[in-house]
Image 1: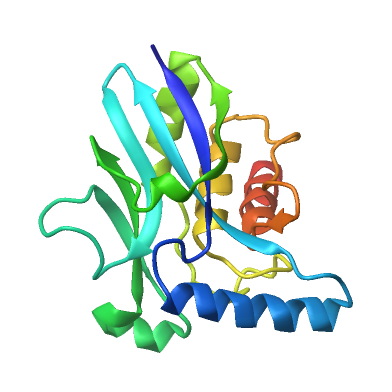
Image 2: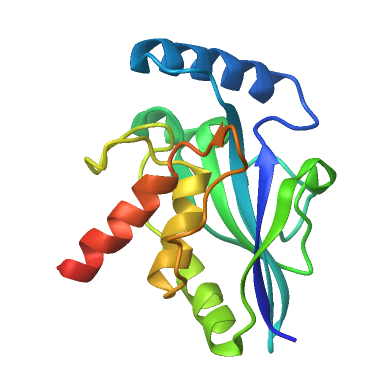
Length: 190
């Protein structure tokens, strides 16, 4: 049976460095925005389609098992020039029979988005087309930084998935989510 499911993973689940950096980032963002701190989430997708089962996610180029991880493209992290080093590049993955690390930490997941085979195929088709601006920056003037959440929301929106009722778990936010949707809308108007 075809399906597209969204998974909300707490930022830095299973590790310390990303989690601590996320806490510092959110504390600063909350202070500047004069709001309460939220839990931060990273989005990943599982897709079952006639062609097989896939995981769609974004991760550092240097992470994960050796060999094929279904990488369909890479982008720089932090500053475009730093992207010359593999330590400052991310990869977009559309990994057949792949795994999402730390899936056991997922919150309010999976979120079923569709059971339509055509939509699942469109999602898979869009992954390789996703723009890859610098991670953590707003180079495209979308009002928030581009990151893994942007990649997931752009892929879903351009594949025709209705994201109107999709949001992170209660008390949380997914920085970059709106950037992906915003770019998809901008592209559809062009």
